[in-house]
Amino acid sequence: MLLLFVGSIAGVVSVAGAHGQRAATARADLAVQAGLAAAMVAAFVIIHHREHGNRWFRIRARRETLSAPEAGRHA
Image 1 (tube, rainbow, N blue to C red):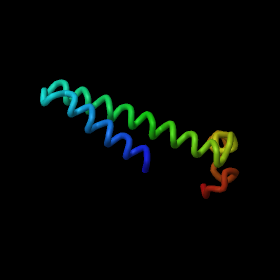
Image 2 (tube, rainbow, N blue to C red; image 1 turned 120 degrees about the horizontal axis):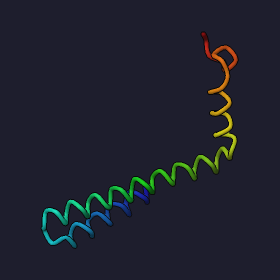
Image 3 (tube, rainbow, N blue to C red; image 1 turned 90 degrees about the vertical axis):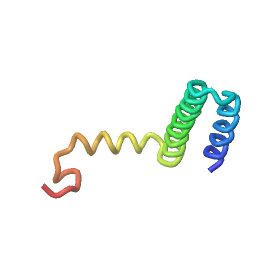
């Protein structure tokens, strides 16, 4: 939630700094959206790594290499 709040404030400040010029406003908005998307991906990875450790990645890789019955899925 804090990340979205900071992104909203950054969007308002950057768009206001564009002084109403269309191209500058579009670039500022795109830069904020890209930064917010990168921050959300980083937060997602950090939270999942903290909760599951490296086990999350190993389980996914192991299940992809197993056949359907071995992975617990019905054939």
